[in-house]
Image 1: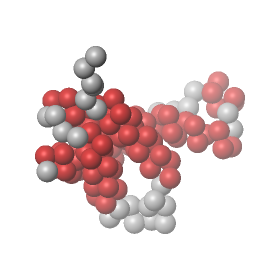
Image 2: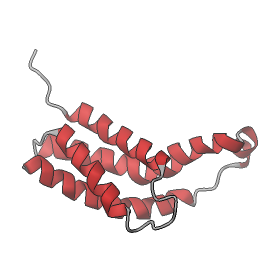
Image 3: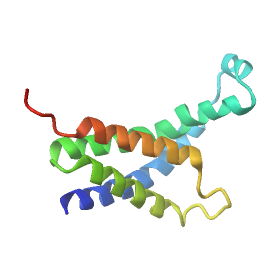
Image 4: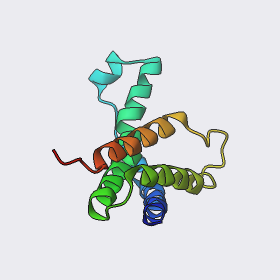
Length: 125
């Protein structure tokens, strides 16, 4: 139960903070040297590693890892519940056709599951 409540709170916090942080990270201009080097679909890498990772990825990673270590919750349950809660919270905010943004889902799920893997209790040696 504690893991579910933590996941819901993390999902709501991440949805709120993610919108703000993604707005700031999306405003980061691509340096000219990088823009000349990458083109077309390569800009997806910029979207993944700069916009989405700074906006949603790092915040969900830190929150899940902190909850797992400080509150002693199940990190896997917490990460899955946080992912579902965040996506349901974001759904009404984005009413356009691109509501389900695959790059956002990849980054969010990757960071949430990475935090869960690092947050699991270690066995005594």
